Figure 1 (cartoon, rainbow, N blue to C red):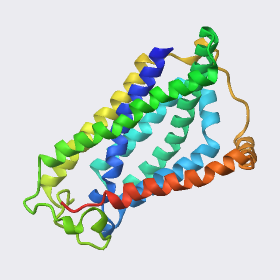
Figure 2 (figure 1 turned 60 degrees about the vertical axis):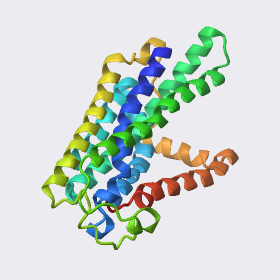
Figure 3 (figure 1 turned 90 degrees about the horizontal axis):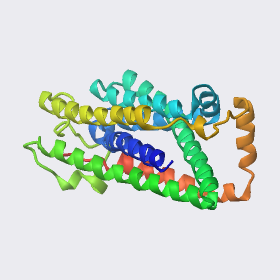
Length: 278
């Protein structure tokens, strides 16, 4: 069981080393002054995630099992990274929406998988299942959060190897960045063949990481049927009603401001803070 926790954690580390690192570069690669493709694509991911969370997880998990839901959903992220090789609104935005739909299934399946493992491990060892589940999620997020470290190291190495002769201008970077700033001299300008090569190298590395994550899940993760995986009953309509009912719970209401704040924080980091001109 512990092996499966590690396998899941390492696979997600590979996947989000790719996705998170590519996501934080979107507004620099495709700035607001150039149509805002980066911001639109990231926004579309979460639109798909919201819609998918209400309609898809139970339906998909019941039909392909938890393990293969995780495996298949990872290819939504692969599709998004593939979109970086030909970044246009008609390629990247639809890919982002599909990524969001897949993300809703991925996270539901992952949480279900770790929860079932925790209950079973607690039963076999005589430990409190809630304590075991928290421990398993702690292990998972140790690996998951490290993805930002590895991803940023990769981005730094790749982008640093092709620095523009223009150099950095701190007056229009980070907190001083303005969406109306002309970024035509940016390192990753789409019209510059050398800079396209840099983008392709970066996207290729991240694509390899995402595919590696799917391979890890497919080859190393044990199906849950050996631990008594059961189908969850309920139609999408029943799931929506259950979600609405849950929103009345006092604890859930108290979590809403934290969730909104977290979303705004991620939007700031993904769209504003990381917007640079190099």
